Length: 220
Image (cartoon, rainbow, N blue to C red; front, side, top):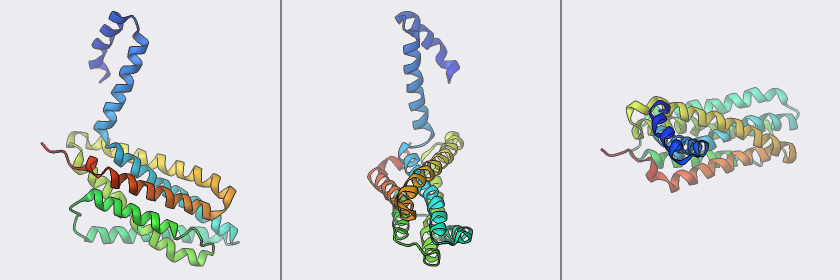
């Protein structure tokens, strides 16, 4: 891309005498265009927010176990959470593909947020276990649906890059969710971490619900 744009960029800089300014503007425009070609912004933001719930849960669960004097239960509880995701993935794989993938994604995000919300008032590890099983059930179907939307929306020549952007959004979301939950857990206890997870999940649901049209497959 840079090689093809080099001639026009140099010509504009020569004609205007403001090379650095023009170069910066063209770089920003090129980044925005590349982002639009790689992955819909609506999907990237929603997936990053969903991933932030994962990071928040991974902070809140150990905090809850430590507060209850049962630090050794952390691994088991996170395993139960993962089991819920696996079972949800099995169920989704056996079901027919949704006709409206964006709507289905919004419903899964709502389920994720509500499931995490149910964790907020709970402090006992024994009580957290079944709730984490339910809260995790939307994770694998959610991610699978997000990747299927990329497969439907993006042209085949750009799908590999789009999947890479989606993976990057997940990584960024997990890191941000962990950091935010860590600060709030220190200030308000484990429930604050679960509240973060619930809030960002429901925000992601609202974004997808409001912008479903941007995730429709392109027509030839």
